[in-house]
Image 1 (cartoon, rainbow, N blue to C red):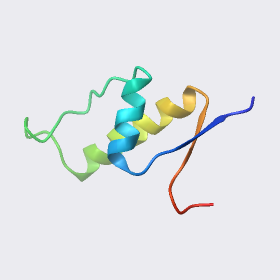
Image 2 (cartoon, one colour):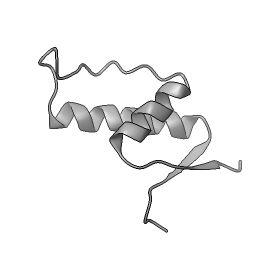
Image 3 (spheres, one colour):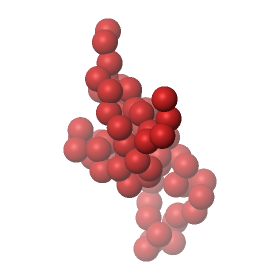
Image 4 (cartoon, rainbow, N blue to C red):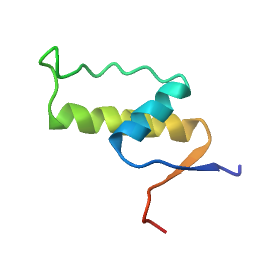
Length: 64
């Protein structure tokens, strides 16, 4: 399968793009007090896995 390449620049872009594909964030937020570095990493990893499951290959600016 030939993956579609997408360039995403950081956490916000990853979360936004995953959401545009139908991903739902279930990792809490800073307002509820249930948020820290571990939750942010888990949230980002979940979003990346979702994007990749939709046939995308993520590239980050500056990476070849």
